[in-house]
Amino acid sequence: MNENEYNRCVDELMLQIEESIDNSALEIDCENSNGILTLTVESNGSQMILSRQTASREVWLAARSGGFHFTLKESIWRDTKTNDTLGMILQQAVKSQAGEFIDFSL
Image 1: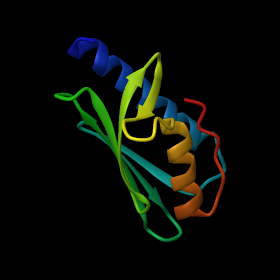
Image 2 (image 1 turned 135 degrees about the horizontal axis):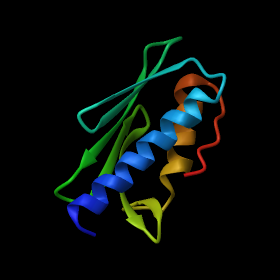
Image 3 (image 1 turned 90 degrees about the vertical axis):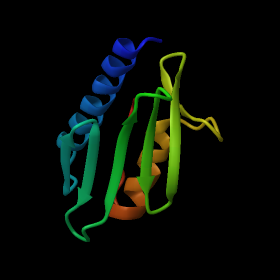
């Protein structure tokens, strides 16, 4: 995948995440700036940060539960260590930090 394709895929991913949160009733603020999507839980101020890693063609997630690296495999973002999907890990992070369930069908 070249850099343009990678950036297009990450842009789509971050937009999908924002739309999922916007369409939910969760009190989570989304801020997208310079390839970084910051999700802030309004009730406790905790954050989850998704960042674009262009050189490695990865997306990184930082959450209270840890740091995760994802690569695109067959149109699905998967953790480089466990092969779990980004949607599943982000869903668990939101549940842990916000106490609410959201379905990220990424």
